[in-house]
Length: 369
Image 1 (spheres, helix red, strand yellow):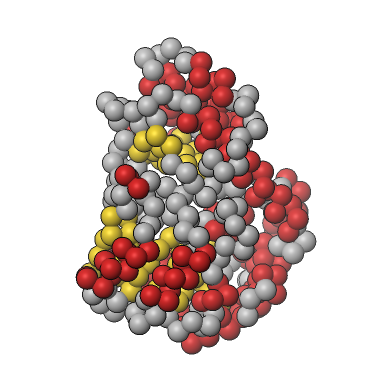
Image 2: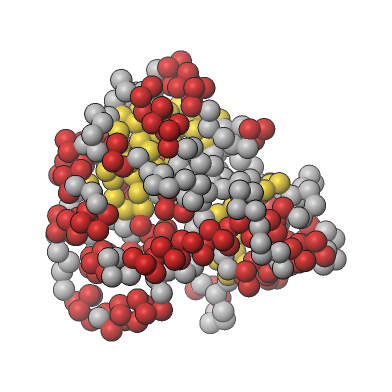
């Protein structure tokens, strides 16, 4: 944005953010109270956590709140990961990078493209046993592919690994799941001896700048992390948003429904592009693989310079290559610009009719994505 020299910022298909929330009314409310928010200290984390738990139906003793989920990943690694950690790849990079930076052994379990990057619980458990990993991680839905493990399969994984030091279920994108009701396992984590569930409000609330995440675990585990955190690790913006959540909950739920509809439409439209592989997702993004002979780096640059569209090329993600792009789900007017730019690059400059026509097919089979 700083490099745009005063021109319009690019349409962001890179950072997974909810485009429908907060509503303009919420931003107006924040703007009216900006001086107070910035001028005074926030409450301590316990006060903010109590309000969050009251809204979400959680017990405060099972929750630790962080300045973004990355802060919590850092503290979990420092406090609770002692020897080794198993993690499927590709996935969110901090789950491999953070323990490697502190000298832990990271056992990387490759998710296979031939299986659409789906996680096989039995095979993953066997991998953990063979490697002797003491901590196991899954992201559900996974990033960058959006693959989703049904709740009963997650619970089976937790049962199979009951003897590990720790099992972490990163549900940072869980709010976008509509494959089944109440998909998360936070309630189970609160009563199990070795389970942490990690969640991020920045992504689903569309407020990455606030840096706001929380974890759920049994009271002893939660206290170990909570006691290590600085007393004022949450800022006043985070506090204001937490105390507004209950008031704007209907608007928030509506934003998730709209995004789910956009995901299904965008999946269908991308699927009409010849040679492009599109992976089913329960996140607010779609992973695509470019046709043979194409590379994501020049396509990324073309989209940014010629069409003002910013995408995530995945060449630096372990387990993928630069033929993969992660595309955030956005409203249809933005998707039109993306499709035109991709078509121009991939199909020799001619505006191929198939994806553009696909923009009008709004009624998509909800099971297809």
